[in-house]
Image (cartoon, rainbow, N blue to C red):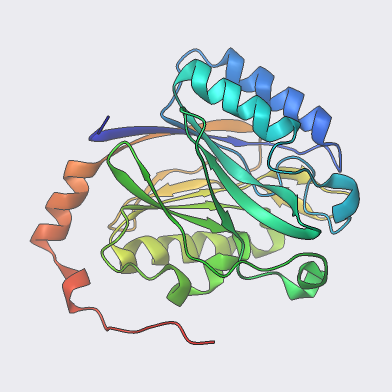
Length: 260
């Protein structure tokens, strides 16, 4: 089912430190209580645990309780659910952005740029594949937090319409978050949704949210700061296509390939 207007919610809030069961129950309550159900519901980076390197204690497998529960909810409400969590696969741990479709299909992207200053690169295995998800006629690039600082990895090759960044982005670098999200929207002529958390984690790092939707011209469409909120936005694919046709920047872009 193709849709010109895509309706997205994102939950900007605190995360219970290293407690996947408590976080799952909370998110299920939030989704069930929504008066209007969106096309896509997005959660922050490492939504089931917070940004922790204690991977053995907090990880789940792809057939674990969180993914299974979200599959049921996605089917029940005919919506997709997305966000990253710690996944254990064959003894390797990934910061994995899951995109769970209403029909039970699960697309996923493993975070490529691991934050070495926190030791994430020692605890997790980095992803190698750039993932664009097809959903209701939209092409959606999945990205996780630190990926935002690396524009080549998200360069639009005329293959997506929307980037979703799920993040635990600290408050002391909030200005960088705001600036780079606008830049990614402008340079790629796309919509951008950056979903961040609030509160403080177990390492006493603070977060102020600042989740934001940006349109292809770099204009903010919604941006709550400092408090828990369900952020809602509606985007138009026809408006995006019209803008790209009138101002076809992408066709003049440089050709390149990623090299290790």
